[in-house]
Length: 221
Image 1 (cartoon, rainbow, N blue to C red):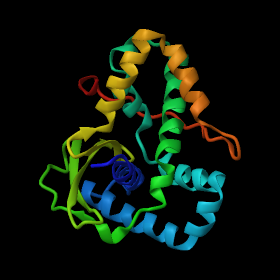
Image 2: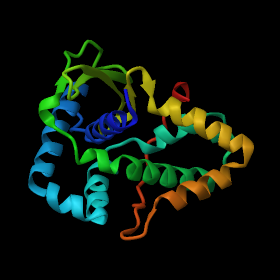
Image 3: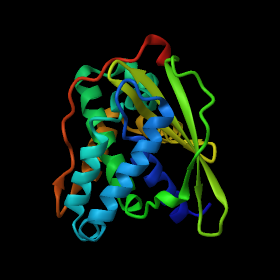
């Protein structure tokens, strides 16, 4: 898959996966309901969002921030570095990584088309701690790309923490990339770089501080 297509699929996948339902929703309900909500937002605001990046970031953040388990995702990305990081470094990384990811995939969100998404029947256990929802995205040439969402069950409901596209997990991909960078420099240097990439010359900082997120169980590390 070329880079442009991958970026579009990844952007749509992360945006869809970010929206969770109520505690009684199943993992597949989370994804199908999210697709409808994202499509409605784009139908009403696409031209304005294309012209205003600050507004685009704000819309995505309003959907993503309260519904994406960004602490858990950040912990999985940092892996061993998470255990040695201070509380201040952890918080700084969570914010910086989240906002860098939001900026990276913002443009692709504008290209989302609900008619190209097919949610496959759920085969997992809704009472388990984690679940995978499988979907397919139809490309321009009619071929399909498998997109799997990793969700974790919290007291407030299911939250997405990972997206796997054609077997490539964004958590594992970022973990490999950032581990090499941390080893070559430092965690603080990586945080500084991510914070820099999270600043928009037109819209200012994207960061929206999140509240406390439930710590994952020890076997989730």
